[in-house]
Length: 164
Picture 1 (cartoon, rainbow, N blue to C red):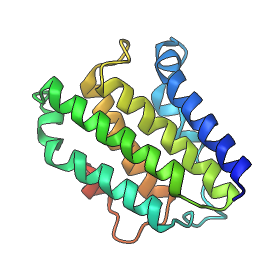
Picture 2 (cartoon, rainbow, N blue to C red; picture 1 turned 180 degrees about the horizontal axis):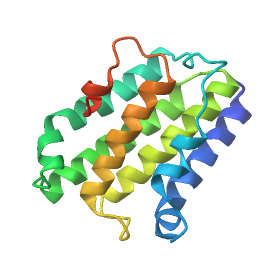
Picture 3 (cartoon, rainbow, N blue to C red; picture 1 turned 90 degrees about the vertical axis):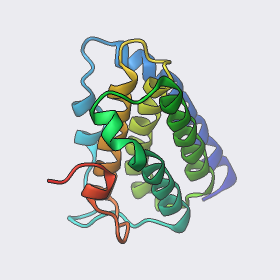
Picture 4 (spheres, helix red, strand yellow; picture 1 turned 135 degrees about the horizontal axis):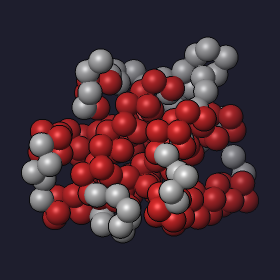
């Protein structure tokens, strides 16, 4: 991907992340309908991934896994939500900077990234319309959705927090 194109994608992602609280505050906005429903498979197949994407997503999943019970029981401390938000945004930045997918796959990935960013904002306490817990649950859902649409060997929904 050319440098100007990558710069535009980074800018678009940062703008999307910055707008997440405003989008979430919109009464017409529904989280279930926003990003995940717009995702599509690549002619019936999961989208190809690369090493930086797999690394970043695995790091986010590894960060949330130890806290799943506390998140679901709503007992996780604000400081832990803050740390999880910071680790998530760090990994988002890593993926945006280093991931080199085909344009169609990249467009689909940005829908997941927008959900991850909105979740991180809520966990950090930046989204007053959504609790930190709901942000963490949104993060878990985004990880699950990622596994449904992207070919990441060894990725399972139950490992992201939900067994179906």
